[in-house]
Amino acid sequence: MRNPKVWALALGLMCATAAHANGVLEYAKSGGVKRCLPVIQKLSEYLIGANKEAYGAHSVRGLVGADGKLFTAVIERNEPSYTSLASMSVAPLPDGTCSAVYEQIYNASVSCTQMALLLPIYKLRTTLNKEVAVYEHQSDDTQTVYMMPTPNGCLLVKKGIWPSVAP
Image (cartoon, rainbow, N blue to C red; front, top):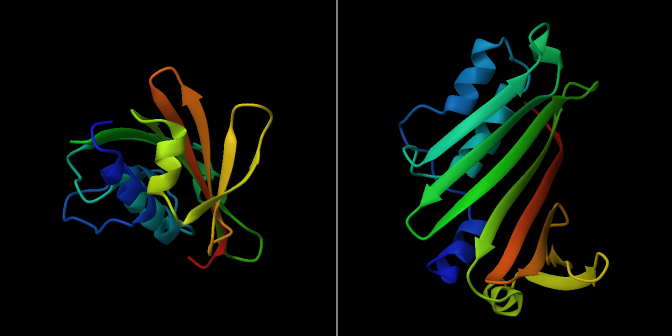
């Protein structure tokens, strides 16, 4: 990662939608997914970011009855100052809403201590065992960041859930 401040901004902001095609959404549509399409669109656009030419994606959906099943995708996002790998899953719920979960993985070239200072909206809550620190968002209990020291910096995983979203 060239600039950890840029990464910190990317971690906390939702990006605007560009006019280019969203391959994740198109794949869901082509497979017959209808019910959760608005949620798939919103989440995939957030993970892809504004630069629609700087990503690649792979999606998985059921071949039969895809509209009522779990839809999942993996997205590689390449920006000038960082690369991220994201995973998203969206599923219909019996009440007609949709539930979603996502993870974004980044490798920072600075220490986890330095990264934590760049993310003041996240506060240290605990460690998982010995190495991985758990940071929770101060005002949004659906977002958590995990930080693990690496030989050259810090591995960060941002996890978010959308428990029940109307399509």
